[in-house]
Image 1 (cartoon, rainbow, N blue to C red):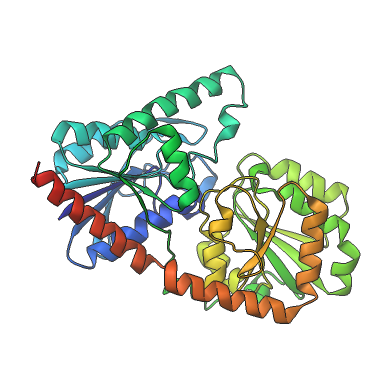
Image 2 (tube, one colour):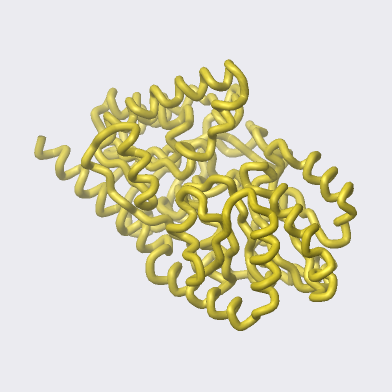
Length: 397
């Protein structure tokens, strides 16, 4: 089977987030079974910061058993990367099936157009774009117009899709609000347990001599970092007594300067360590050496970061917002608090640090959850079954 996976970013831009890892994991697992899989994407490269494109990246790159086909992005509007050449690349390869990941993207529109042109079935997966871009609606007339245009195309893509993949029941309901279809299949996100192993000594490399709790994600207010900083300020004396710090790892998405100013104004530079643009191996080693992960996001659909933390038997404190409770289950593999509530978050952090037995119990539950339900092998197997089912139905039409 010749499979095209179409998405806005891929390797080496791991800091872009979940879309990159989902596409790579699906491609790796399915190509290992003998299928011809290519990821069609942009030349996004975070080595010089977000929204940076690198024409020196190879246009075609073979990684293990799958290929990455990159076309240059002419420009970007927020996270909307324009690379028209992707249309020709997919078209000339004539895949048997096209799987687009990241619906609020130029690449998903190109995947839809090629699918219509060559009559290859289209599978659609979102991974957060439907819920994590409300800033477009709130950023003035121009970006509000972009948001409306994107929604127009998303509805067309959903209408044309043979199957729509939802990560959980929450996302399925969002799809149903946009377009009433019965072909929505729930496929839970998964992480690669084999790759989540570290030989690094994180604390030694960054000269951290105390215990630490961890935040991993974009430097953006949508991730609730401002609330997290307030929470740390509330329990700063307790953290000093417990010899515990906060490590914030990620890439700037417009909040870095304000974040640093806030930390400095509150005199928290001794309690909060910021690591900008961290290599992937350092993020992995940080999971393993942390006490637990804190992800106080205002909105998330089906985040992969908690699953990665669970892979190291580390629990997660997060919010009960949007799709998060389908991943982080309160008092089972983590603790959930109300979003935008720094006092509740501070109390949750303090209470968990005071009970290492609960940290251990929740962490083990998280690991069992990933191993049984949210690993990339089962995810890719479910996706492959959908590919085969779709092609068979398409042939019988």
